[in-house]
Length: 350
Ligand code: FES
Ligand SMILES: [Fe+2]
Image (cartoon, rainbow, N blue to C red; front, top):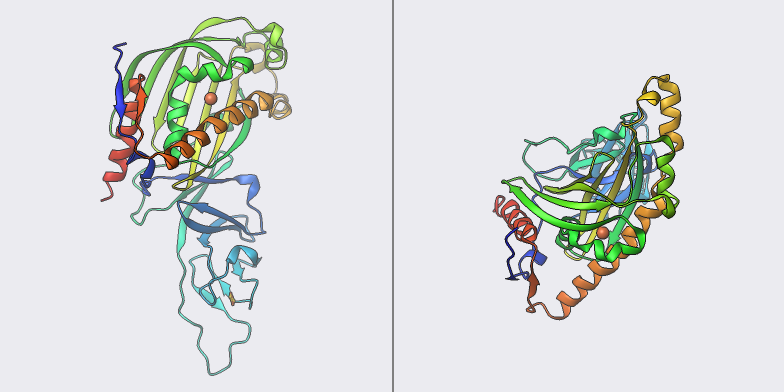
């Protein structure tokens, strides 16, 4: 790896918007029921709800009558009813009913915005762009796959999304997590990048090897862990992140940037059971039982990593707000690639 020392011009990156022509993750599937829920994606308040058939809809979270939040209301049939005066809106955002409409009055033509949403792999993916999508949601094939056990941790940080992505792409920050034993001795080998993604290839040492059925207990008992070399690949697949440590672990970070100084994200960790060929010969119902029973096996590790990372990321944001002209000194060239991708994605929409 060629070592570079670069005074990163961070100012504009920390004020970048998002490219809306991608699918963002705004909620977990389980969070959206027939009771509407309000979410915010890049300053846009959005009401999510399920209709009587279980289909998810996303409408602008604003009643056009008096501008209050529609997510305070309720679902009636397939319509969303405002809590205040009971006006109802259909899934296309048209006003469908006003309970006190006089005979000589017409329904007001006050349409609100409807967003494209998809429910896929346990999450709700929303497309905030005005064009029709030319890309598919990133998707998590391991979510349904019987050979992977999942753990989900929610990140809520008071920082611009660029700080989170840079944290996730800079594997030298294993230093921060030494006590949690996630990975060690990362060394950047190579970077591939194009207009949509940056793939940074590191070598590292992993503490965990999932090759026996009891290996899962390494997640709980530190004494069972042994350091051994593994490739560590991290990818910024705009606007999300994915990683792989050897054959045993995959982690995704699904982003929902809220505004310039707030980011929500879902960190999804998968432990592979691929090495257990005996397990794969067992009936599907049993394999599903194993998968479901082990859901959340890495919760303590994942939540611990999130707490440590969020603390650093929020401090970076505060330091920037106090001294926006102060330069950072960056030695990891993957971060230069990451900033280039963020900028180019936003420039595309100008
Ligand atoms: S404010 Fe929504 S119905 Fe009046
Ligand atoms: Fe981290």
